[in-house]
Length: 146
Image (cartoon, rainbow, N blue to C red; front, top):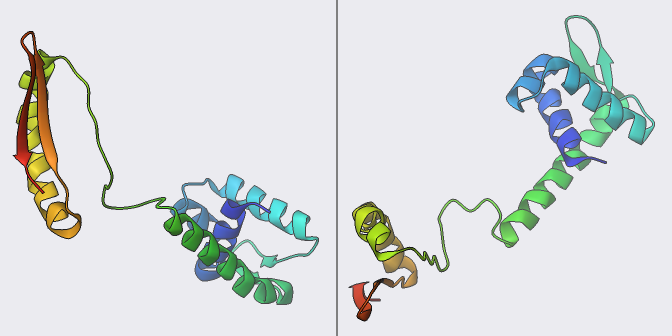
């Protein structure tokens, strides 16, 4: 059973329109219809009554819908537990680049980054250091102490 097919089925139950449900998930009507057919074939039951104007759930579709919603909720909870789809960045970001690139591109970009990470620093103790290698050796400056 394909998770994308389940997402389509749940959207279809809400919109009652294959074209609209497919469009909301970035699918053409033909592909959306094919996905629903594959889901029905895999389950061995008809989930939908289809007419040229309307789509409605069969009794089996109505019985299957809460289970499909539960599976999708479980998948989202599992993804969230491992950090998939996080909105805020976290962790260590290391960039290695020549000193000239750092001076020309990275340092100017740091201003915007620091604005964002100041908020993060207050929440989770971020520390940012700017390290620039020169011929004389490493020059280390603490840009934002934790």
